[in-house]
Each structure stands twice: as C-alpha cells, then as structure tokens.
Image 1 (tube, rainbow, N blue to C red):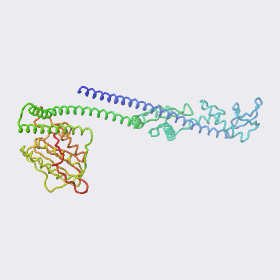
Image 2: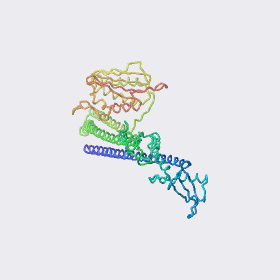
Image 3: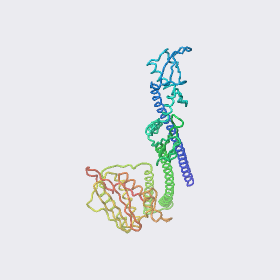
Image 4: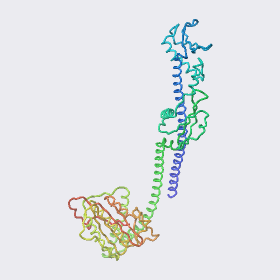
Length: 516
C-alpha cells in the first residue's frame, strides 16, 4: 500500500512537471514568435510609410510640373494633325524657342483632330502629360528634359521637396494601426542620406532600431527614415497578456490539482495508518467482552450451578453484551460520520440546563476517580435550536475526555452574549503538545503514547463532537499548554425568540458517551 501511494504520488508530480515544462516551452516559443512578428510588422509598416511619403512627394512634384506647363512665359504648347497617322500631335517647346528643344507627343485616347490648340485641349494635355507621362518617367527613374527649363525646374524640385518628421510620424502611425499595433510607441528621425546625423544613437528608452529605409525623388538627395521602438519584452508582454494569463491559470490549475491529489493521497495514507491502529485497539476491546461472555456461557453449560451463581453469570453476560453493543454503536457512528451528514431532530433545547444535568450525572464518576467537577453556575439560561441527543452526546464526550485525561480539578463554565452561548470545559491535566492540537479532532487520531495505552479510546469522540457542533452552526475549539491543562470551548448559536423550550431530561434521553 505504501509503495503504491509513493508510486502514484511520483507519477502525479512527474505529470505536473511535464505540463509545467511544456507550458514553459510553449510560452517561450510564443514569446519569440511574437517578438519576431512585432519586428517584421513594424518594419513592413515603416516601408509602407516611406512609400506613402514618396507618393505624396511625387504628387506635390507633379502638381508643380503641371503649373510649369501652364506657364506660357516659359512653355509654349501647340498641336497639329500628323499627316502620317492622321491624329492630333501636341508639341512642347521652350520660350524663347531653342534649336532642337521641342517634344512631340500624341495620345491614343485623344480622339479630336485639331490643327490649332484650344483652351480645353491645352488643359487636357497639361493634366494628362504631367500626371501620366511624367509620373511614368519618374517611376522609371528618369528625369527627361522635355525643355531645358522644365528639366531644370524638375531637378531642383526633386532636391527641395521633403517630408517632415511630424507628417512621416502620422503616416507610420496609420500603417502600424492597420497591423494591429495602434498602441505601439515609437520615435522617428528623418535625415539626409549620408549625413553624419545618421550615425547617432537612438533616443533614450527606445533601444530597438528598425532597419533604415531610404526614400525620395532623386537618388542623390534621398531622405533616410529611422525608427526606434521600446524594448521588445514590454511590448510583446502587453500583446500576449491574454495568452499569458490563460497559460498562468492553466498552470495554476495543474499545480493546484497535483497538490490536491498529492495531499489527498497523503491524507489517505495517514488515515489508513490511523484506521489500522484503531482496528488493532478495537480488536482488543472487542475480545474482552466476547471472552467474558464465552467463559460465562461455558460455565453455565458445563457445571451444575445454584440459582445465585447462575444469576451472577447471567448478569455478567448481560453486562458484557451491553458493553459489546456500546462498542459496536461507536463503530457505526464513526462510519455514519464518514458517509453522510448527521440526522438532526431540531427543537428548542434549554442548553445550560441540559449541561447541568449532564454534569450532575458525571459527578459520581469523577468522585470515584478522586476528581472534582464543578458544574454550570445556577441561574444562567440559554436556549438553542438543535438535537438534544447529539448535543448531549457531544458534551458527554468532552466530560468523559476530562475524566480520562484531565487533572483532579475540572470546571464547566458558561458564557452568553447577544448571539451565542459558549461552554468552557477546563482541566488541569498534562495538556496537549502543540504539534497534536490541530489533529486531535481528526477521525481515529489519538495522541501518541508509545506502545502503552493506559487509557482506552478509539479516536472517534472529539471528531464526533466537532461534527455535532458544525452541524448546529457552531464550533468546537481547544486551548492547551503542556503541563497547564486544556480548555475545550463549545460555541452554539442562540435560538431566535420563540416559545419556551421543551423540558428534556437526559435521564431518559438516549445519550451515549463517545469515547476518544
């Protein structure tokens, strides 16, 4: 049995450790993946933000280009019908015209055939040429000098158009929000490509640097976007707080379940040992009345006895049979406490009167043992709502305990407040060691005294008495110091205002004493 319990305990602990190890590994992998995903998403947001900034710069540049085309002091736009293809061909030339400085352009989607430019055709050409033809050239990385003046203006604008850090920060925040990183703080620095400032460290508190991204309209004058993020652990932990919380709860459940299982097995092991000791003691107790009954029965069967001797043996058989019945009743009571709640017949009970009567019944037993029992002071009264039989049995258990283990002086006192009544049973016996005080209420437990048991008991009484107190909404506690005696306190709630309690006498109530 012991080996099986240790084996089961080891398997439970091993399984719990396995779950903990798996959870730790899974959490670590999840954290690493989330950290990597955070960096990847942030880098993608940075690239997308630079693309948005570049598109804005290009739109500004094309808007300027359209304005330059409309400047008739520098640009002359004309058209004629191409004799070969019989469609309108637009011409862009500088003002004043220079030799060879002329560009002819036609569009498939311009269907009117015009020999001379019209205001509408001019406006259509400017919009189409700037936002289609020039855009395509810029995207291909070319700067086409359709006229000397247009080329110079375009090159200068490419070097002058810049994105401000505030504008870029808004673009980056938008891209981060699209990727579920709306609450991610960051710092932005825009520098010119190759500038000394690009080699400076990032701002304090933002140690995680993303890969810088170059953007701009002109290769030799591009901007560099540098972005820094706070330390990854704090950001990732905030993102994973729900997952980590669920993981922590699962670990707590696993460890709590393992601890509960191990504790239950240990309690079962201890209970098995206590039951074995109880069985050993009870076996000896049961053998005594059985042996006496068997001896008396053999004598009656084998010998011719006179009437007086026969009556004496019959009385002995009756007494030992009654003792045997009491032992069996105590065993059955212990089994009943394990299997179900106490069946209570509740009614108003004059509790202090009941206690006084019990104390009076025990006076002869204390006197024969040379002890003195002082009972409940006269004049006090308290009514509780409960089962008189079980309450009497619980108090009888405490009195029997004091008779067995207490000193020569035992005092039963009462204390009443607004809602409860407390009985204090104090003895000046040897007391109970601190390490056993919490266990004396356990079923089958007896304070160890080695292999010598001078006082008979089964470890059931105090457990039963505490169960009775709990079933009535009360409590049974003890205070004890070795060498200075023990005080048991039985607290019960007072009954609400009701008719007078029934007169109950323990002289006729079935109130057996549960021994400890």
